[in-house]
Length: 348
Image (cartoon, rainbow, N blue to C red; front, side, top):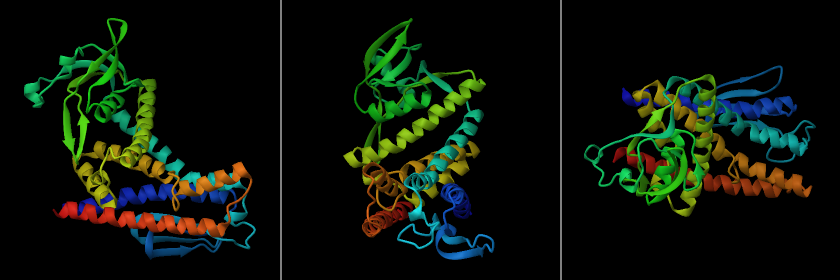
C-alpha cells in the first residue's frame, strides 16, 4: 500500500512540475505565434490524446511520467512554415527556450512562500548549545570560542541572513575548521570554529550543534525569508553540480526519478509541510538543471542562441542537431546508469 501511495504522490508531483515547465514553453510560443505541433505531458506511448480543430495542436498524456515536450515546427530542423520556431528572431527563441525553467523557478519560490507562512523562521543568533552527551559528538563548537548570543553574519566571508543559509554553509564547509564573522556585544569579530561532523554517502559534512533564536513573523520578514530561502535553493543546485564535477560529492549522491520518488514518498509520510518543501526544491532544481549549458537541455539551446546574438551568425541547424543528438545520447545513458543505481539501492 505504501508503494502505491508513493507512486501516486510522485506521479502527481512530477506531473504538476512537468506541466508547469512545458506550459512555460507553450504559452511563450503561443504569444510569439510559433507553430506548435504537439504538447505532451510524459514521454513514450500516448495514453490519451486530443487534437484541437481550432489550433491543430495535438495534446497528449503519455505513459512515462518523467518528462514532457512542446514540439514546434522548425525546432530541430528547417521548416517552410513562416511561423516555425527557426524563423523567429533570436530574442523570441531565447525567451521561449528559457520560459520553462523560469516558470519552474518561479513556482518553486511561490511554494516556498507558502511553506514559510506555515513554519517558524529563524535568524542567525546562537541560542543554546546542545550538550555533547546528548548529540554523541566528540567536540562542541562552543569549545572554539563561539558563545550563546553571538549573531553569525558570515561563514568564510559568505554572508548569511537566515538560519537555513547558516546551516547550509556549515554543512558544506564545516568538515574542517572555518572562520565565522560574529557580532558579540555590539562588536564585529572573526573566530575560527571547529564543528562536529557526520559522514554520509562517502562525504563528510559539518553539523550545527546549537539552536537558533526565532524571528517574529511579519509580512516583510516572511517575504524576505522566503526569497532568501528560494535563492539559497537555486545556489544549492548550482553548487551541487560544481561539487559533483570537482569530486566533492560522489556518484552515490546522484538521484534520478526513482530516488526522487522515494524521497517524495518519505516526505509525504512525514506530512504536508515536508512535501511542500521538497516540491519547492524539486521545482527549482528542475529549472536550474535545465539551464545547464549541455546539449539536449534548454541550457544547450540557450547557449547556441546567445552565441548567435553575440556573433550575429547562426550555427547551422544540421550541426546543432548532431550536437543535440549526441548530448541526448549521453544524457539518456547517464540517466539509465542512475536509474539502475537507484533501483539497486531500493532492493539492497
